[in-house]
Amino acid sequence: MSLSFLVVQKSSDISPLFFTGVLEAVVAALFMNIYIVGLNQLSDIEIDRINKPYLPLASGEYSVGTGVTIVASFSFLSFWLGWIVGSWPFFGLFSSVLCLGLLIQLTNWWYFLSNFKIYGF
Image (cartoon, rainbow, N blue to C red; front, side, top):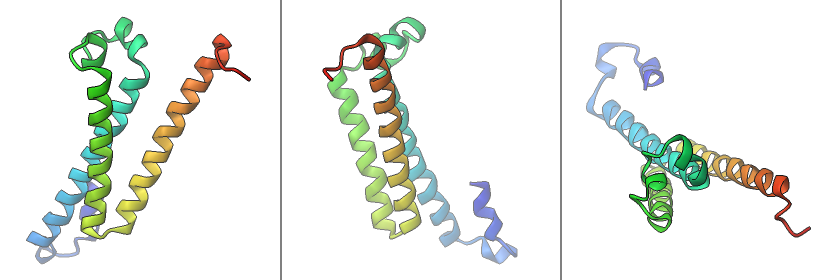
């Protein structure tokens, strides 16, 4: 959000349009943050049952299906907002975050599987 104020040269630059743009960026970032945190919780349920038993998935407050629905919904909402706003930088950023989040989780799963020789290769 502080980067948004770099474009302000004079006080007249702070307009409703400026605040609309900042709000769009903050809401889209919030949606993507919920996606990333939810993805992490989905992949670490067993670890979180020990280390963070108060989390919704670890405590059983939410089912895995509910977690997947929330993660997928917020991923979609962030892309939708980027599309509606018409900002290709937003859209590119969210695409990168989506891919990196999935890559990190797949890497964690692959590491887990390779350490326990569960994979079938």
